[in-house]
Length: 441
Image (tube, rainbow, N blue to C red; front, side, top):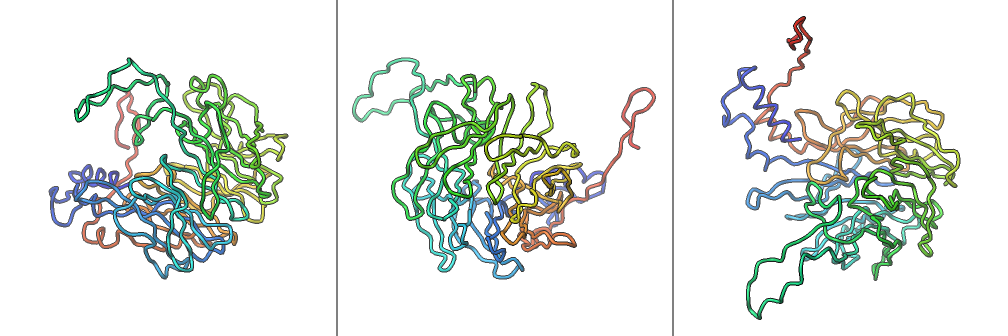
């Protein structure tokens, strides 16, 4: 978001007669290190507190970091939970609201961490060599599901001799034989396959739940977020287990995976993405997103419902000509909250199983470093909604959705933007002239 602000400021300078770049009351490139952004707000089950990821950049290391902060739903008691140049992300409340699991670094390795709400003390649950992702609490609060890479051996170009003792040779060349072998941000991918694991909330050795030469976890075009069923006996996940999964990366299905033994079965059966499963509080219905893939450049992502056994799949968002995402059931099961974009504004909507929908709140913004925090929201058991609020001249803050609009709880960049207000943004309309040129209208 900052980069958009800076670009708007610089672009608008000539048009609005702003002072020259580098003026003390105007944003500059180095102010990127002064901006802080709230992402991934997670409201507690009782709706009283919100934990969020606070992103910032360090000018001494030229690196972006993130810590966890908490604020009460009325805006009071705003405080840090972790401090320092860390990379703490993905906070998730336990079902009873007494603990917060998150992903943090311990001696250079990402681990699943646990923070107790009453004492705010932190402890590592795992001792992993590969970074965990997509953590999810079991309904009884005793187990955490997560995804992680199980390393494999990539192709070798040649059998190279070993370096003599004490020699400093160049790193051996790396070869890749996968169609998808790198991602923005992540870089080149390690060989191996992502799998789903389970670990006790008291710590201990994790148990691998899925197997096989398929990306059962992350590192796919459609990421896997394991979702527990209310009875705690199964996980739901969007996985592509087709033999041609590299040629058809969007062809995922919603799988049911037994917690007891890892036995699985697909609940959807079609060409196209079936993703983001969300199960109703009573366990009878599953909402998910996707479309029938016609191999077009763009296709509208719809919201679907099906029964728990996979029968009667049908779209309930046909009346909304917008992509939908992040389906989240209302605590009373009467409908589903979802995210959609409308004329450049990201909003939270609410839709009933019958397809009737309305907008709940708008002006959601995204963070800058983690894909999982992209313009996110969360819903408490009380029905309260926390989300990331912002606009073209205001980076992300934490807000609560209210009847009369959002109640913004944080002001992370108030001082900076008061001293260096961003350039004005003017909406310009364009029209076509008779000779086909675009003219300002």
